[in-house]
Image (cartoon, rainbow, N blue to C red; front, side, top):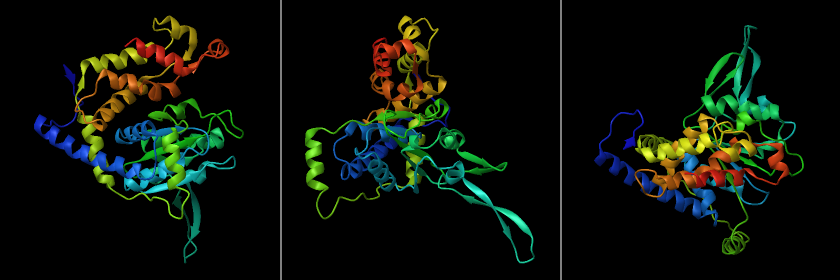
Length: 334
């Protein structure tokens, strides 16, 4: 038994044909990114899954791991209108959203005109997002969830598609602020970027220290990306996958009958985490060339989808327990 989303009906033949076209496009996207980003296959996969699912991603890692380069490359490859904001301690919300300025015409009449900020883009790179104050970080809350912003009581719609790819340095580093929990929940996934394998780092040394670096080229248009995102939302989801998502997310909440969770977790993921898993499992299935997700997709995506939506108790942190440890134990339960 499978569960279908409420979209206009599509025949199995048409679904297969659309999926084959999407697979060809996804293959070209992967090749385009691979010309510039060496190794880090899991990072590229998870970031692309987040974009194909129509969401935002938080890239976390120490400086020098090509987080910014990856976002720039994706913007070019996907043909998205991209803007970059370098988050700093003195950045203000108006530097992101825009502001109203007073103008005077030839007759002396004065009026306000809205000057849009860099958030009005299809792909917003929030570089080192945790180096700005929580007040400034919160300027993204409405945009990331509702896809419009409100300035002086007036609504301004954002371009479509709209994605935020934010980079973050580990919180232990100097000059960083933790992101508000409400904003963390807006990110579909948190993608942890680790050091590259030795062969990938060898290739980096050989190919990026010469006179010319490899440059990304455009292979897709934003309209086509939106079509693939719609196709993903139409993909059938087996009942076993729905049950696995519900079991996993609900077991990560205190007070739901899981003794380990009650002991280690202060607060757990809400329904938005379940929605994120539903979308991401579909996107990962298509990314791998399958027409329906499996429970293995749920297991593979549990950590990036849940880890930033949970907080540990003081006792768990004192014992050296990490959110990854808790999620890994919960995954075994499905």
